[in-house]
Image (tube, rainbow, N blue to C red):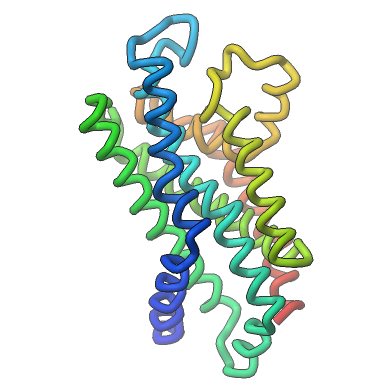
Length: 248
C-alpha cells in the first residue's frame, strides 16, 4: 500500500507540473490578481470594508483559499475525468492498485500544490506590500488543512460525477470564477447584494476563506466555519467514494 502510494504520488506530481492550466490557476493567477487588487485598494485599513483590515492583509489568506479551490475545482476533477475516459482507472484495478492508494496520491499532490502556491503568494505579498504575518500560525495551518480536505472531497466528487474531461474543465473553471467573485476573493463582501452574499454562503470557498482569515487577523479559530467545512467534507466524501469504486 505505502509503496504504491509513494510511486503514484511521484508520478502524479510530475503529471501535475505538465498541466499548464492547473499550474497557472494554482501558482500564477492568484498572485497576479492579488497584485491587481492591491494596486486598486492599497493596504490602508477602512472600517467600512474588509472588516476593518487592510485590503492586502485581508486578501492574502483569501487567496490561499483560492489556491486550494484551484486544485479542488479544476485540477483534480479534470485529472480524474481524464483517467475515466482513457480507461486508466480500469488499468489501476487490473494492476491491483487500490482506490485508497489512488486517493492518497491525489491528496498528496493537492497538498503539495497548495503549499507551493501559498508560499509563492505570501512571499510576494510580504516583499511587495509588507503584509502582516498570521497572528496564529497554528490556527491558519489547521484551517488550511481542513480547507484542503474539503476541496479534495469536492474535487473527487466532481471528477467522478461529470461525464467528460471537457465538462469537468468547463464546469470547474465556471465554479472557480463564480466563487472567486462572490466568496471574498474578489470585490469587498460589503458591496455585494444580498442575493450574491446568499450565493457565496452556499459555496465552500466562502467558509474556507473566513476560516483562514480569522486566525490570520487575530480573531481566533472560527468553529462555526470549521463545522461547515467538516460537513461539506463528509457529504462530498460520502457521495464520491462509492461512485469512484463503481467506476474502477
